[in-house]
Image (cartoon, rainbow, N blue to C red; front, side):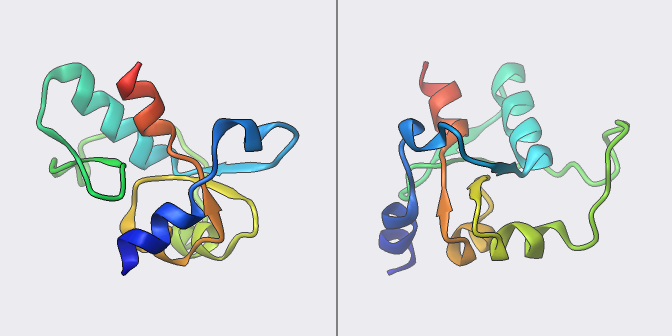
Length: 104
């Protein structure tokens, strides 16, 4: 049932016009990095792409930290960009930017 609900909440790119969009940038960055390096990336039943890499502590980038960003994203009324299952199950609406970039 979760997969059906995630697909129901997914919006098309036309919905992004004049909307505030919150991006799970770390999730998207790791996904694209894996695609570009030839690592395993899987197309899932909810139409997202996910990787299986373990990246804890391996990235050195300057970022703006938000306490509990997953919760902020999951509870936002804005359009969310992520492939994180926990966020997708809780958010109101989301856009599948990872799929758009990979399928090009």
